[in-house]
Image (cartoon, rainbow, N blue to C red; front, side):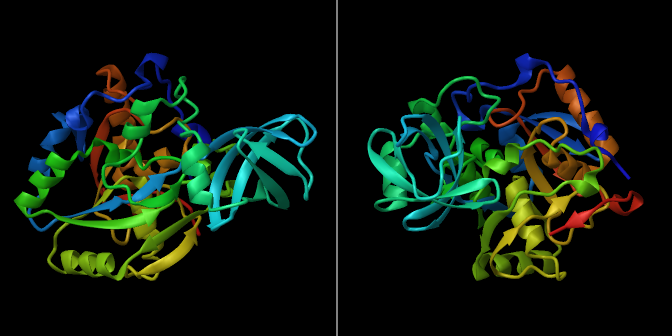
Length: 350
């Protein structure tokens, strides 16, 4: 059984990418092929997938979910919207010197007031005076990850968003998809690679550290996903033909695997708190495109389950030694499901 310390590593601060490259597809790609490691350009992905393979993208769109404001008492607050519940209601993190009581109001962005409702665990329920999405777009700020040390600017608002983002609701980007530009997508389609979409609204919990050494005690954050009948049919057709189902990003993988717990991918919408560690048996995804993840993170555990613990340790050591760029604005890896996951113990919770 692995513990939290098994997923730690030392990362030089200089390797944390603070800004995106000038061109989306100009990043590097580390192809992890069993025990072999190949340094490639991301555009080589066209040569590394085959006609008939299926790329599955997460089409969530990042909200301008961060607000600064003041309570009716005059105290300053910072609000990060976690989930839109309906047209006028959200769950949000609220940082303040004193917790705002239910029934009080908070003025956001010096533009409008929200009413504080009941607590929902670590989140507050906030009621907006008009359409949530309109007010977020007009007055909110893009919430960059905590390891990026500058406030979002106009370039970030363009680049911390995939070119195919269409379903608003995330507070963090599905970052593996940031490497794809339209010319690269066109080249893949021209080759005969199939493309499908799922939606998983990435929550701020994706950045929460695991705080317990015993992984069985960790409680995974919950996120909402949707898989259409069209995507489910495409996955079944591709699997029946013996081709690869390639998840673009861990969020796409979590959506696909969450909807495959019965053994076959089921269309629909649901919350998922699926926590994947070594020992998990993957049911749908056979290959994965992903960025490099934080030490001791649930995502590092996921990719270790997928490609093999030893292989990921070797890949990360290689990436550090060769100055790959890490995290959201960083470089990418192409992984293949190792087929050796049953050799180690692990936990699966949903």
